[in-house]
Image (cartoon, rainbow over all chains, first blue to last red; front, side):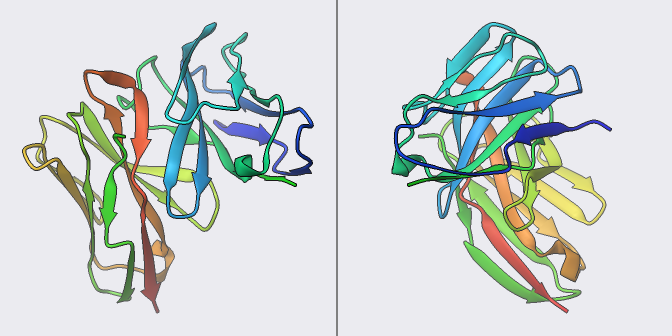
Length: 115
Length: 113
């Protein structure tokens, strides 16, 4: 089944404790992206990757890191989480290396709480 | 920011009625997409309309795009309780930011049985 998976689905952590949210897709998609969703603000793009070893900042990259060493995986790293990073996070992938040309497939989301 | 505005923020209708949601964006785009989200779950793609198209249909969905007004509308005809969800428009960043992706703030639709 074609899908985007994220782990963990739920995470409660404390300020400053490094964490990684994994994202994997099995559709051989070039473009992958991370979003955060906060009430009243819709989804905001954190980082995106057009292909292996090619990443760039979205609208709200501060406090986050990403890597794209393999085509299928695109982990989101919070080196020193803070309470304002409490949010619902989504990973998505799309065919091709350009945003907006094709539909995005979304993972189920990761609900992160930073105390 | 390229982020779009959606109108209305919330909409409550009876089953069988039509639902119309509007989206406005700020800069030029290549394509506009609509997505649905059921209560905190992942988004599901509904329809994509290209900047050179004015109208597109898919089942009970009708999307229009007016690039001169930088706006789009999503019409759901003969709504069902299962259409209850949040709906988002999404655009690329146009020529300046074509690899970025921007979502609107969403319209929360409630279809009463």
